[in-house]
Image (cartoon, rainbow, N blue to C red; front, side):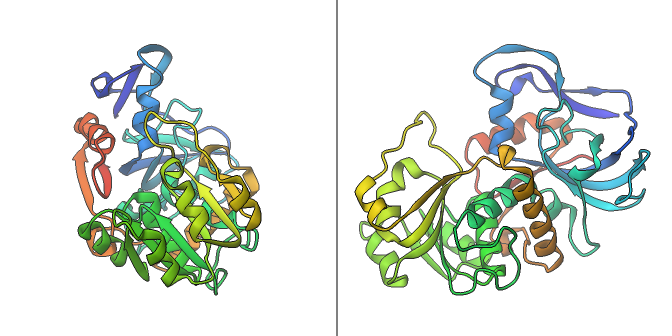
Length: 339
């Protein structure tokens, strides 16, 4: 089978394509023939590492993907050969990501994909949607698992509404009944946020961003899904309502410290939540997987430019170019056609 891998961390040129033996599932495992592999910032960051370094064994990149189950191991109960599925965290603490034709995974990392949900959509769930779900449910008055109406009456601010996590946060929050405000940096990105379902869009490059958000949410926002807390902490505190949660899932390149306005945060009883989907506790992660699967079945997590997330495609032998596109900040979702 064809697979992309790297034996040392570094620039994208460490990625090579070659033939590997076909794997077979053991007890509790499922083999998936990957049709589409999704690329996220975490994938190129893991490949780059902290600098050039040899790995103990070759690593196949990419956490997310979608395809068809073609073999199951003993004891597997939820999957059968022929099932359409999406997979998550494939390469987390494992050598086998989704940039290969066949991948063997523990059964719990393989989730049924309805017939009317495309492989492109399935390969776009994973990291972005599970991160967005945790950010939304970190709010004290949110349920552990989102469902239609579960955020009714709440206002959500999504910073960077044109990114993959921001896109998923908009869609999940709207599905759950919240009023959604998205911030973006251009007219083009504003159109994408609206296509994703945002009720209001504010250009954060304008000098009156706080006033614009305040006019839309006079009592303050309940949940902030934050892509750049280092730059936006003061703004987030200003527009947050009492007992709000500010959930940060990313940091700015080259910067790792944030200054939190303590007294204003105290006066509003704000909760600061930092989110890394890999280390979310199992109960919350399982709840996120169930919620994302339910939202997908309801048609709430569509992708494509008409739904606010443009798709850029690469063949498997151009996985390096796909990684570069994400690292360079391409707008939308990068997908790799595997099978």
